[in-house]
Amino acid sequence: MELARLGAGYVSPNPMVGCVITHGDRIIGEGFHRQYGDLHAEANAIRSVKEKSLLSSSTLFVNLEPCAHQGKTPPCTKRIIAAHIPRVIVGSIDPNPIVSGKGVENLKAAGCRVTVGILEEECDALNRDYMTFHRLRRPYVLLKWAQTADGFIDVDRSHCATDRPVWITGEYERTLVHKWRSETRAIMVGTNTALLDNPALNLRQWKGRLPLRIVLDRTGRLPASLRLFDGSQPTLVFSEKALPLTTAECAVVPFDDSLPQRILDELYRRNIASLLIEGGAILLQSFIRCGLWDEARIFTGRQTFGKGVTAPTAKGKTIYEEQLPNSTLKVKCKK
Image 1 (cartoon, rainbow, N blue to C red):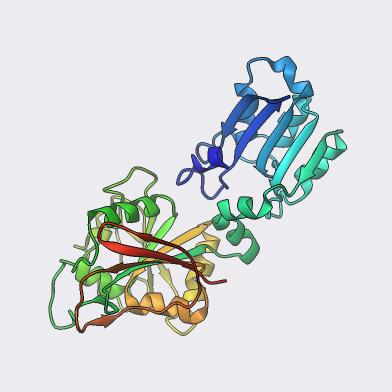
Image 2 (spheres, rainbow, N blue to C red; image 1 turned 90 degrees about the vertical axis):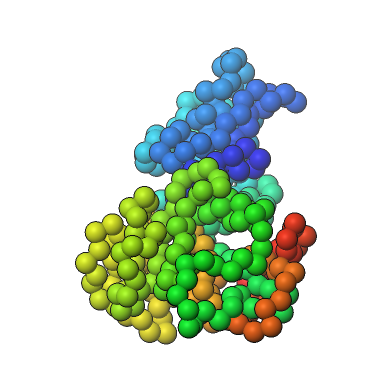
């Protein structure tokens, strides 16, 4: 699992997978899935073994069921069988219908001794995006916002036009958010956030694959001068009508009570396995109200506004809490 995490932000829509090969009490090979389209963890681990003769009496550990189909790379089960590895330990069964159970079946049919379900809960959690995508047929939805100590997400800017957001947290927290962006495939904001903050939604403070930028624009009132439309990375606009965009793509959907579900359906169709929603309050609360969220990461700063835009409210189980330099970070899960 530690090896698998090294692929975070680079392998989606594939899962993060790590593999270790042992001979007796000695590790003789390691590998992980480094980048989407490249060799899988099992292939990299087998290639890393210097004494290939040891493979025929070795054990292969992998956090997710080896694939048994031809994709961008050959089936991992064929590589394992060809290497004559006699024992395979698997964390989770792959929920992808084209794989699920077939990898284990193929290995057993070839004479491998296969054990399944070792640290299964931890392995599932590692690839929560991938698991949610295939089990629920939608992206994993991560909510993020910063609120003041008295519960406001922003000051009232309804009567002013400014692209300068009012910061509630500090530099450390902003860097952390950029890291989260690198680990998700899409980031979304609402119309008012786009107009008032003029966000770039890029990775200025972290390295990784640029995510798909998503913005809502029901009536086409966002100006082309916004940084979202600078052409530097893919951008998708959800609108009620077709918009004449030159640096972004438009998806036309009805803006009704089922809008959150329609957005997730479209992203599923586009093979987007994870979505980070960064604002604003109305957009965040709409997904909470529909129950279409999995995790919320909430920064609570130390200052107060007294009045302003009320922060969203998400009921759920707190699974993590940490004191950061300028705020308290609380992570909640819906279930």
